[in-house]
Amino acid sequence: MLTLESFGTGDLDAIAARMLQHFPGQTVFGLSGPMGAGKTTFIQAVCRHLGVTDNVSSPTFSIVNEYLTGDGNRVYHFDLYRLRKTEELLDIGYEDYFYSGNYCFIEWPELAGELIPDDGVRVVITVNEHNGHRLFSFSRF
Image (cartoon, rainbow, N blue to C red):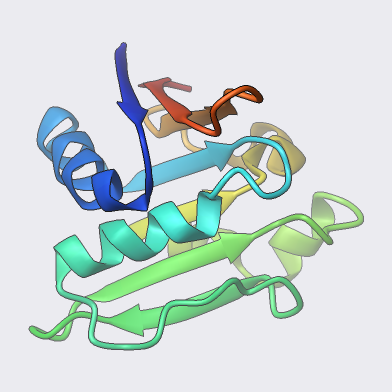
């Protein structure tokens, strides 16, 4: 398990780089935390580190956004907040994304039930209510 603290958004790029370095070869990351914790903002930092050239934004209504890196690799960004039932992931062919070998970043992974690959990385963002700092905890699912 890895735990890192963010004192502001300026720390996110370094935390993103550290996460990718700590989990080499891992491509599926599930981000949990309360609304407003910074899940999308952190994914933006990770995508910058990966060389994504597209605008990275939350796919709240489309469930998944696809981005391209400068060298043509695909990155998938899921937001499952509005998912009503796990079967909706079956309908969009989640396996094609989760098992593609491309990076997948999943907000609200707890709503996917058992569909998240066992070798995925859980990212839990905890907000300190007193100072607004974020604590990032990384572990296996």
